[in-house]
Length: 191
Image 1 (cartoon, helix red, strand yellow):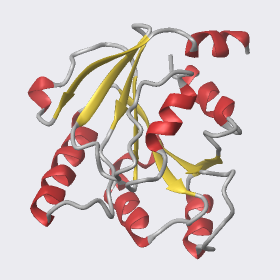
Image 2 (image 1 turned 180 degrees about the vertical axis):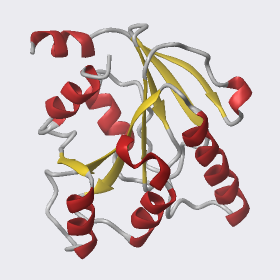
Image 3 (image 1 turned 90 degrees about the vertical axis):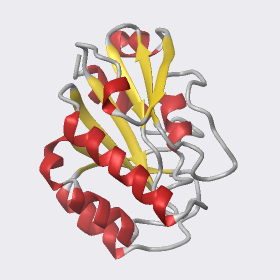
């Protein structure tokens, strides 16, 4: 398992942010992507996985509005997708973001895994189920990550059981790194 830890200590560099496919990087190595509701802890998880601050953590939900590409050790492309949900943006802007994210998900041939994040303390919401339903064509690529395991559960969600029974899932904490190594092993296995 030393190889796993060593791999994630390698360099991770920002490549570019884009909305349109013609600007996406053309690379041959595997790609993984992260998506979830605004304020779910996506940037914190990415930073924990790669042992460094690469994704910007913001106090304002919904800051990510483009597809952000990061190159890890010239072996893996890491993609930070815009969050969905309660960000303070117009319906038109929300639809534009939804459209280009959908296009990204259906067009990237090297996309091996999509990590869909759900706040463990709040539980799955209808919007999470709707998002999963819209991604039915790529079901085998989706891994559910319940974030913020270190926080007290505020809401019990019956939707959690539905998701847990239908998808590979993990409960993690970026704050104390609980469950992070399990995700690193999955990612390392894609290389």
